[in-house]
Length: 346
Image (cartoon, rainbow, N blue to C red):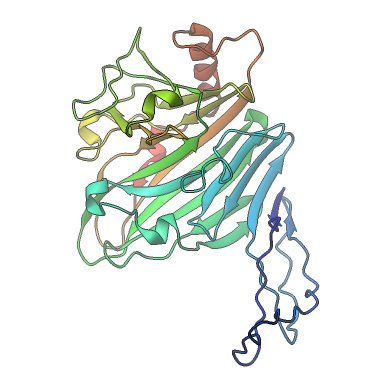
């Protein structure tokens, strides 16, 4: 089920024929709310028609939510189509805005970062995205960034049988000249967890966070107290097309699944797998990037990613080197493995 959900603190805006401000010292009058109800769309139904015009409109910033069984995924289209929740049994696998006000949830960017330095492209990272509900899928489209000519699209579909969601990411070059670019999904998780992924070798030399695989698996146990003096970042090559996060608080295992990217197909000065911890260690970014490809004017690249979430049995220790965690992550990835041919330009 996909629905529009109103936030706890709704933002009210009165739209009249002119622009009228409140008298200084007096609270502005608040009209009664228009008869708005959350939109509910299920498979086989079409989106309800727009309500009839009224003398004024009450505008609320709202999120879109997909609920399936004990699972939930919530997106804020007004904030760069940020995914703010992926949960099982009410336990969110992502760090929330309450926990980390300046960096939370999951965002979609372009790589390499050297194309835009900082901040990321606002049309992708912060500005509103257009939303469409197509049967059982949620489709979000960004505006076009005028500097680089890119726009982005995300199509999100629930996979109830697998306890997963499919997130098909697309980048389009609207500029007049060819450009090389890679898709980038930056997902922020709460402090104190365990990140791990298969890798053929240690972190790249430019990494300030040095990680080395053991028996083909790289482990990162996040200990916030170790990062009081500054931020650290690791760039690496994965080997099987998955990246996992074990979350002690909710006893969750969160696995991101994607097509493996060879090192020679990765964006310059970047990595297929990126881990970032800010000063103070208040969150961890578990990131993966797709292939670095050239897009001619009007061309797009499509990059499928699948998120899978399971609850860990109490007997499974969340500690580096635990072979059972690796076995579970591989089983989860195998259930939803995208075909490499799904990555394409058109």
